[in-house]
Structure formats: C-alpha cells, structure tokens
Length: 566
Image 1 (tube, rainbow, N blue to C red):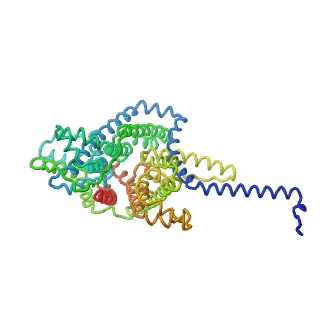
Image 2: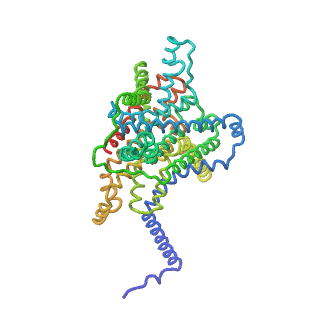
C-alpha cells in the first residue's frame, strides 16, 4: 500500500516545491531555446558588432559640439569636402582608364611580354598606398634625386611641385588600379572575341565595338572594381598624411589627438560614412540589373595579334605602369635599406614584428571562426532573414578604418564609464578602463573591418560541399557541432587557410584603426612607418615598409594562382 507523503508536507513546503519545479521548467525552456537558436544568436552577435559603431557614430550628433564645429566651419570643413570629392573623382576616373586598358590588352591581345604582364600587373597589390606615397615623394620631391639631378644638369631653377592633389591622385591610381584590372580582365576573358567580331561584322570599327558591346557587358566587373578602389581611397589615412593633404580621415585623427574631442571626431566620421554610403549606392545604380556571367570556353581563347608600332606601344605601356607601380618603389625601398646598412634591425624592430604578427594571427583566427560560423549558420538554418543579417555583417569592409575606430572608441568609452560607475557604487571599488585602449578593442575593430575578406573564400568553399554529405553525417548520429568540426573543417581547410592569409596581411597593413586604438606599447610596422614618414625620415621607414611588401606578396600569389586556374 502506497503512502501519500505530500499530505504530511506543510503548505509552505508545497509552495516552495512547486516554485522550484516551475523555475526548473523555465530554466530548461530557456536553455533549450538558446540551444535551438544558437546559430541565430551567434550571427546576431556578429551583426551587432558591425551595427554598434555605425549607430554610435550617427548618435554622436545628440551631443553637439558647437565650439569645435564653429572652428571647423571657419577653417577647414569646406576644404575637406572639396579635397575628398576631387580625390574620389580623380581616382575613380584614373583606375577606370588604366585598369580597363590594361585588362583589355592582356586579356584580348597578343604582344611581346603579354604572359609576363598578365600576372605581373597585379603585383602592386602588395605595396600599401602609404608606402608608395613616401617612395614617390622620396624620388620626386624637391630634395629628391630626380629634381636634384635636373637642377644640377639641365635647369638650376627647376621646381616641380608634387605635394598636391595631382600627386595624391597619381599615387592612388597606381596603388588601386589592380582592383579594376583584375575584375575587368576576368570579364573580358569570359566574353571572348565572339561578340567583338560580331559587332565588327555589322559595320562597327574596333573602337565602336569595344565601346558599345564589350565594355557595357563588362560593366558589373568594372563597377565593382571601381567601388573597391573608391572605398580604399576614402579609407586611406597614411598616404594623404604623407602628402599633408587634408581629407576627412586626417581631420578625424586630428580631432581626436588635436582637439581631444571624440564626439567631434565621431561627427566628422559620420560625414565620411555618408560619402561611403553614397558611393555604394551609385555603384549599385551603375550596375543596374547587370550580373556577372561566366561562360565555359571549349577551346583556347583566340587573341588579337598586335604587330609593329601597336605591339611596341602595348609593351611600353605595360612596362611603364609596372615600373611606376611596383619596380620603382620596391627598388627605392631596397636602396634605402642597403644605404642604412640595416641599422634599424634591432630589438625594437623585432618587437614591432612580434606585435604585428601576434595581432595579425590572432585577428585572423577570430575572423575566420566568425566567418565560418556565419557560413555554416546559413546552411543549417536556410532562412532568408538570416542570409540578410549575414550580408549586413560583412559591410564592415566598407567602413573606413578611422570611422570604425572612432565608433568603437565612443561605444567602449560609454561601456567603460558606466561599468566603472556601477562597480564603484555597488562594491566601492575604483577600477580603470577595461575596453578602451585595449588589445581586445583593437581585435574587435580588425574582426569587424575584415570579416568580409574572410567570409568570401570560406563561403565559396562551403558552397562547393554538397548538402548530402551534411545529411549523411547527421543520419549516422553526428550532432551539428560534430558535423562542423569533423566534416566541414577538414574539407574547407584550403578556404580557411586562404581566408586567414588574406586577413593576416590586411591586418598587418592596417594603419588608421591601429593608430587610434592601439594600447600603449603595441606599436606595429604600420605605426612605425607613420612615425618615420611624419618626421621625413624616409630611409628609416624603408625596412618596415619592405617587410610589409614582402609579406603582402603572399595574397597576390594566391590571387594569381586563382586567376590562372580560372
């Protein structure tokens, strides 16, 4: 006979038991919900890291800074807007002309040296714009060897000013034309010469066939390349600071370190962000409904054979561009390094290398993991809203480093201040800043900035894995975590390595975010280059610059190998 023990319990005990059971049910339901929605929550957290700095930048207008803005309006604001606009337009036009013309020659024409130029014209990818800028000035400035020789042998009064808008535009065109060249070249190779021959058979001459048929078909690729070049132009800080050419990026830096006003810097950053959004919108409008199309070619591509003067001009043109954009700056760096006899190759340089590599490797690992989570979540959930959130998470690459850094600094400053106040009130303990000026904050900025760089190769390799493999693993009893770790990670190892390599190199070259957010004692090679070029010591900046160029060759080799396979 069973005994009902519940009748012997007091009402308080029964109430407590029911409350405990109810709490346990609630806890279990929360845990189960978190487990079910874990992929959504992780992607949302990544998207939030992109959304917060953007939102904070625009919300900074709630804290007006009338004195600083009055100073900016009276002195430099109109100049900043005009300089940024002219610089953007000049670079856009230059990379369009240079990139498309080089892509057409190497993709569609046969001339002496074509096989060499086909891949060598991508080598300027490895030279950061700020490195090319101080090499350009070191060679062509008033005290440089070229003008000095001209004054000594030709004209004693010769003076060619290069620290101006034209000089900055020239450097940016040489540094960023590979974006247009690489994409336009692929588009022209996919088209082949069939459309060109058809247009010519209908009465068009060569120029008309190119202008009316080939170029419009390549417009999506050309527009995408121009958009990338414009984004890099708007985001650049190092090259314009070398030229002492004021743009929004230099004004943001000066507002923070000169006026010591982070809110004024954030408000300036919001104006730069409006420029970026406008450029992205115009790029989308320029593409319209056009899409990239690739066609399998069943036979070897037939090229137009250039001969005589045309072949000579084509070879000379490609040689001139490659010489100015890669051979000349790298040769100048090597000369300076030899001239200084590696005087700066000391313990400080080793420390700079360690800081640069440790930050780059750590950021690469974090970014690749975040990219893998986003790509795997899209495959598991198969939800259009999650796809949109994931695409939004990759917009950090469109944010200039100064904009992102200022947004994160304002956000982490607010978190630190409130956390310090809370701990002081509750526990009576005074703690210092935890996030602002920390390695953690710097790694967050790198992850947000370069997530798109990692997401591209990871997602493309993931799409090549058939869904049936995932389903087979689950049918054998594997959990989603086991499928990810034991199936996808081994199969995606090439894509993960490429993504990590690209992020590593980009982090090592990143200057504005590192300058603004680095903790004390965490100088990098890029920071060292900025410090030396700010003092006009080009020779001492050569060793870290040459190191970055050598490291930067790795992703260029990856791009070239992909291009050859394509």
